[in-house]
Image 1: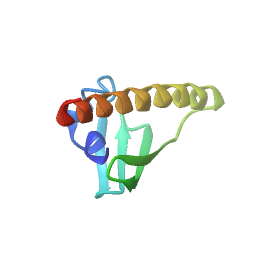
Image 2: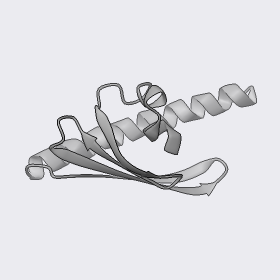
Image 3: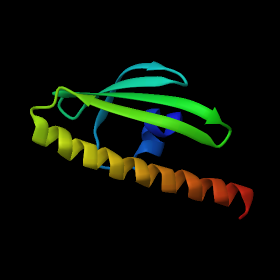
Image 4: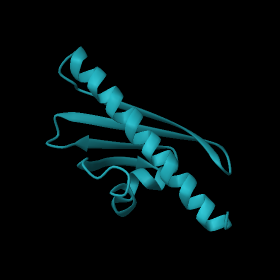
Length: 97
């Protein structure tokens, strides 16, 4: 899960429209990015719960107002659901199911 955020070649598969500029990375737990033109920031925290489960928290800061915050919440829920589906497909392909 963590590499899906920090590896641009993997990230484009599930987050194609986001421009992330890496600020700091503390593998395998946290990564900080500037988004787009740098007016917003992203903190990603990954907590492994076992070999096949993780909790991901995405915090986007420096947003203009409540409307933008709600729009970004919807965006990230959709993006994380896409990531989950992609990772599940990859795991099924590897295990031969």
